[in-house]
Picture 1 (cartoon, rainbow over the protein chains, first blue to last red):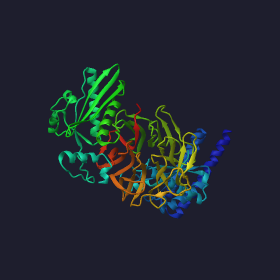
Picture 2: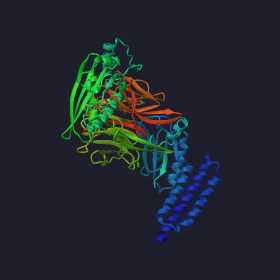
Picture 3: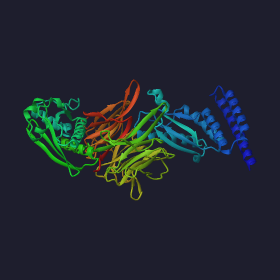
Picture 4: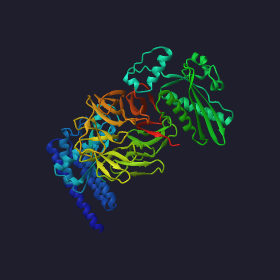
Amino acid sequence: MNNLLKLLLIFFLIFNFIGCTSQNEKVLVEGVSSNVSSTTEESDKDIEENDQNISIEDDLSETAKINKILNEKLIEVGDRVFFDYDKSNFKKEGIETLKRQARFLIANQNITVTIEGHCDARGTREYNLALGERRAFSVKSFLTSLGVEDSRISIISFGKEKLQSLENNEKAWAQSRTAITTINP
Amino acid sequence: MIKLKLCSLLFIFFLKNLYSGPIEIDVTKGTIEPLPIAITKFNYKSIKEKTISNQIYEIVSNDLTNSGLFRKISDNAFLQDEEEVFFQPSFRDWSLIDANLIVSGRIKLYNDKLLINIKLWDVYREKLILSKKVEVLNDNKLRVLAHIISNLIYQRVTGEKGYFDTRVVYIAEEKTANNISKRIAIMDYDGNNHEYLTNGKNIAITPRFSPNGKKIAYLSFSDKKPTVFLFDLDTKKEKVLGNFSGMSFAPRFSPDNKRIIFSLTKRGSSNIFIQTLSNNETIQVTNNRHINTSPSFSPDNKWIVFSSDRSGKQNLYIKKSNDGISKKAKRITFGEGSYATPVWSPRGDYIAFTKTYKNEFFIGLIRKDGSGERIIATGYLTESPSWSPNGRTLIFNKVNKSNNKLVSSIFTIDITGNLEKKLNTPGEASDPDWGPSINY
């Protein structure tokens, strides 16, 4: 039984590794990231460490570990897109981020995600809750249009309750007008 | 002039004209002078009565000055003592120190009961204009009793019901480096009897009293998604409003306490629903792909007002509460900027709202038919107005900016926009909602 689990985990990690590598290749083709080689090295190391740990740790913490790696991957891919004031269609540069997100999600079929919609502090509370929901939904719609299954994506709005920056200027507000994709634990 | 007619300021206007010759009152410039009032100590015999007398004096003085309508004259200036004035003021002495009104009273403890006689004198007309007896069981209701006395004075002078015995719920905010904790707090309108209702583990926002003061509807992030909860103030227990597939938010009770109106999200849109609390039956009121939120009932339960961005930006709309989705709502705002958070006055005459225009925030009033729009307050950020039970004062959230730091507080303002007052809270505060009178 234990052996079977181990096998499955190793299989999963290899799958994940392949997924990530091909992901990085695509990033390179699109010319977005200049430190691709170093990140690949880092992920190699991560996985080596993981391999050593598999035999001594239980299934649950392994899952957590895998999730940690996947979360790091997601951040590398780009976990968030941004919006203009009072708008729910994400900014143009978000399109490429979401394309990478979609490839990542298709490559890692066993994860589900929640998209958090956020707003800046310069709107009323209840409207911002609705606007955050709409932002999260617009990201979800785009991801599903790229082939990610609808059932794998939940959405939640935080309105202006979890500002990404508590500072008080246009730059901070722009940071807070975002939709963030997070991997469900 | 129409504006003046609407409120107690007419009385001031009237008094000023009558007593000190004609004066100009420009309500748009905030030059209203509060009425000078002499509050004499309430007469007593025993030491126990003395303590009560002092407490009541403090509370009444605080209430009347807080209303912004009165200016308390210093005791040092008084030429007549409280015993004499209770029987007959020497009006000449009081007019010398410029008092327009005199409050006097007497306290008696007997058979475990507390009896208070309260008198209000009009100095210029040299007349007793209020004389009442208030009796209570002498338990811990002293504060309420004092507030009732303030109510009587306020009502005699303004013609409006007093609000000094009401409570307020709001969100107590605590900021750390990169996190804000938000929990529901309840207190008397003057900041006393402050109590936290939620523990702050989860974000809680937009608490709203049921009009009978028994429950609070609010939004909590305690579930996986933001959900409307109902908090019972007697049992201190809470429960979810319902299990909906989307996010439920923006709750408000109907004036008859029987229903909750709120928004529900689906596929990125927010629409308005009404749930009957007795049988959990839910009807849909709006049905479109836009944001429809912040609904509020009219005092007769027949109409609702809400904000919607169906025109491309947020505006206010009204429709009949029992029309369901069959009829279109009528737009009532057409000015520049966005209109949000409408809330119907308990008197039915006005709808208060938040307006944002060119990155500025305003609190305003408008009539149901879209006429009479005017702004009564502004600030770096102002929002979530809520009416006093008498429909003559609003409580709202105001964020002030000082040294590039933002400080969130709650303020009250009368409907002319002249008498703005900050409420004392232990920490930062937002989302105030004004409740009914305390049950006694």
